[in-house]
Amino acid sequence: MSMFCFQCEQTAKGTACTTGGVCGKKAATATLQDQLIAELIGLAGAVGSSKAAGSTCKVVVDALFATVTNVSFDDGAILRLIEIVKAEKCRIASKSEDSESEISGGDNDLSRLWETNEDIRSLKSLLLFGMKGMAAYAYHAAVLGKTDHEVNSFFFKGLRALGEDKPADELLGLLMELGNVNLKCMEILDAANTGAYGNPVPTSVSCTVEPGPFIVISGHDLYDLKLLLEQTKDKGINIYTHSELLPAHGYPELKKYPHLKGNFGTAWQNQQREFEGIPAPVLFTTNCLMPVKRSYADRVFTTSVVSYPEIAHIGEDKDFSAVINKALELGGYAEPHTITGINGGDTLMTGFAQNTVLSVAGMVIDAVKAGAIRHFFLVGGCDGAKPGRNYYTEFVQQAPGDTIILTLACGKYRFNDLNIGEIGGLPRILDMGQCNDAYSAIKVAVALAEAFECGVNDLPLTLVLSWYEQKAVCILLTLLALGIKNIYIGPSLPAFISPNILGALVDMFSLTPISTPEADLKAILG
Ligand code: SF4
Image (cartoon, rainbow, N blue to C red; front, top):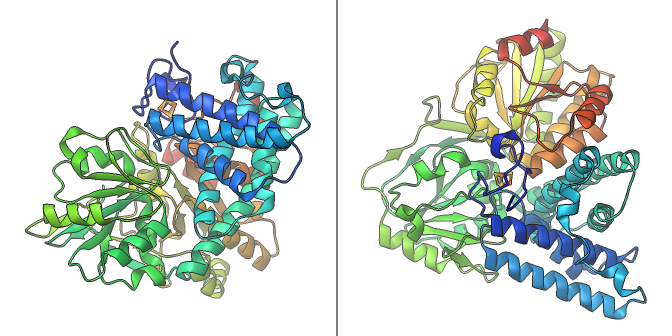
């Protein structure tokens, strides 16, 4: 076994990648990422119960984010992070009275974690992967100047716990704490995004690329998009979002740019096919980057923590001149070019975040009372390449006409080009945004529960989630920490959840693996 990684849904044989990653991650990179986590555990030990400086928190957040699936394939970038973490640990240690052994990162060999009792491994994996996911959200909030002491402190607490012997019940308690802290993290990110770019409004987005030079921007980072829009103003270059950046079109301070024209392609896992022969550059701001094919490698750029060997990287100065020049050099399509959604649709609606949905709460509540709306489904989460994800398309297609589909994250590309009608002028599919906009969905659910004077679990609402990587882990922990039950999850269960831990989650939260759309709809609606 030259590596061990089972952190995402596409892990080899549903158990673990042990010789190379299905995602394209090499064994050497996986080993370096484990070493980076081990050094972070050492750094957390050095910080101890003290309040970490903002610069130390940034080191931890950047490093955790870099180990999320499909973020960094670059050994050089991971090695640099290891050196930064080591230097930070030494800096703190030199001021500390703790003994050298207590602050040693080298003792935290992650292979010990992977080889330990499977239930403890399962709980610690949930903790580690949940923190990786939360780090991505903390990163985006920090870019917009928002940080939170509780969120930052938890990273150190959780990392220390990974290196310590802890009983299962204590680890389970930490997972619930992480879920609650992640809610706070999503709240500050929501405040950062809406503070900077306004509250999203319903917006129709074209899937057609107009003739002329253009740039595709992928990932999740609205700040990078804003900077790119500024730097391409009046240059005759159009900008198209890709995958998880689609919801950017709903934000007033982004949609005001006339050259933010539309959306390119479908979800992340189709990029190698959709970028083939593209006459434009593609900028990756966060996950999800797939191994870059030689046929379009000269037009891919990365920034922030995303990195790939031999691919041009835009540094912290965020000077996108190289991307802009590449767009002008390639020139774009000569004719309009449409990449339809997977069901053939050529426009996508987005912008139904909490503000918009709650602005029509009165109408929604009346529709529920009158029987025009029977049930709400939140069908969301990550998309992915493995078979079985058609479930989500079929589920939405088969959901009765008196039901509303709330959605978020890139899993919506399974059905967001469908027109399944309206109820009282409200589209039946409401795109609430990116994965972190689960915060919006939670706010809407809580508001509905208050309006109906019941608990969230008593609402006519069912969550039908698709997971792929570690951000989905922290969102799931948040939902569980809030006591939300009867969540359907698929397309397969995480390899890192052991049978005993799964049994416990089923007992405590009635977590249910998806089966077929027909059977699940019948079980939910009767
Ligand atoms: Fe395998 Fe997923 Fe890990 Fe990649 S991130 S090595 S596909 S488990």
